[in-house]
Image 1 (cartoon, rainbow, N blue to C red):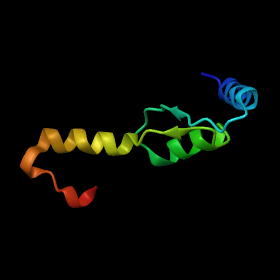
Image 2: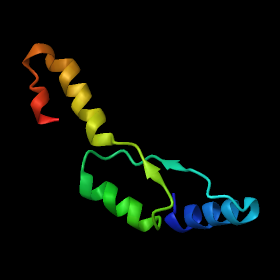
Image 3: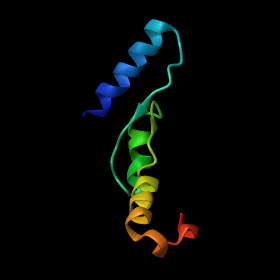
Image 4: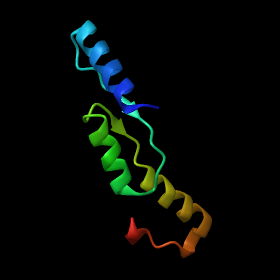
Amino acid sequence: MDFEFFNKLIDNIRSSTNKEIFTVGEYWSPVVNVLKKYIEDTNHAFNILDVPLHYNFVSAANEKENYDLRGL
């Protein structure tokens, strides 16, 4: 979805409620720099899920005792 839409939507909600409403967005990429760009493109209006951590947990679940948790 268009970043400009999200920026306007969040700005509108916050100004009409006069509250700094907590927002969370999803951008499913395992690449940290891609997620940082998403945050920048939305003018830091969103908190986002830690998708790289999710993928690490999936790998840990699949590899079981062979997964080295020190890499998290």
